[in-house]
Image 1: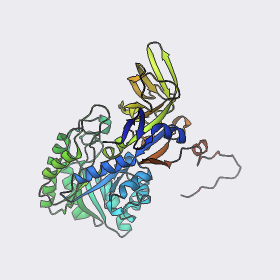
Image 2: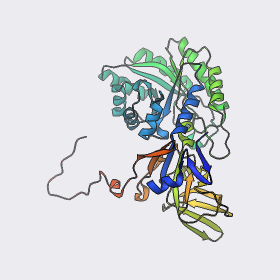
Image 3: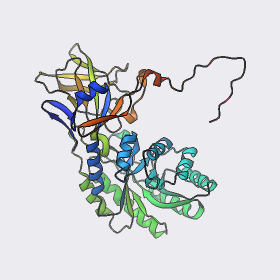
Image 4: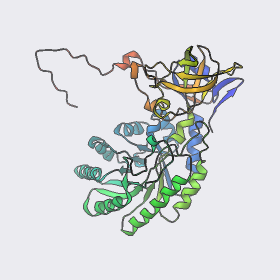
Length: 427
């Protein structure tokens, strides 16, 4: 449940109207509900209150410092996939001992940064990566805790671009190879400590059955490893629990919790979860203003000031996002494409959508945009990225200023030819 709703025909985020935010901050702007963030975190964590567990919010879903700080204040850990995400989490007050580092392409400098920061563990994607971690930890005279990401070959029944648990996906190691990897690490690597098993099958999963199937295979693996003398203390189940964008009916975290707790009985491990979308997706909306309307043949277009550079999901995945007018009206309904200003035919927020007839100047809220919204945005077409706002009860505050044209060229240099050879700047 989220805290976006109509009150007296005006659309509100908690106690603040969307029109008020648009007027004071401008558009496009991402608007987040703090009350929703807190509710979602508590709902997820409480589903596992009966067993030892650690919630590690997936930073990639939305990495704004204010959001990270909100979760850190609730005791959340964090799942990161880059040195930049580690930097953000630490700046937001994260406990490094509650950070897990996932991802297939960790650079050496990022691994070193994480080891020096004393994170909980690395979710390792290959034996080559493990060897690099061992070498860096040895040079630093430290021990690095690791889990191997196991690919269970389970179909998550989601969009193929966000499926990660099949054999054809780039993520993880197959079970038999993972067993050999654990044994090799125990016997040959002096600076890594295998302490966990990691399994993540995909994102926006709206059924329990794929999780149960993956868990069944992972449970067998944990028992096998313990029989081989591997001290498995953590089982990282990843993230992936879906949300409602349109007509999906995803399982409540309580149902998910019941299934996982049942499937991990007597394993003697601490469960780790990496929820992202389920925490922030429905806690945010992209607010945009209508610039123009036009009709081309039999097609209606509503041109808004937010585009695919602000919210890539519709263009990238064909994703559905509900669109709410800031004011309810009694206008007739039309079928229209809601499109942005980007010079691409794929720049749209909605296609063939049944909406109330809308006029230039009106404000719209593109819903369920809290996850993979701003975090995937870009400066394509040299467009400054949107502002971000946090609503807290009857007030709100800006948590990211709107970029300016000057920000667009920050760090760029116009080379001036000289007879002297330019000095190389060391980084």
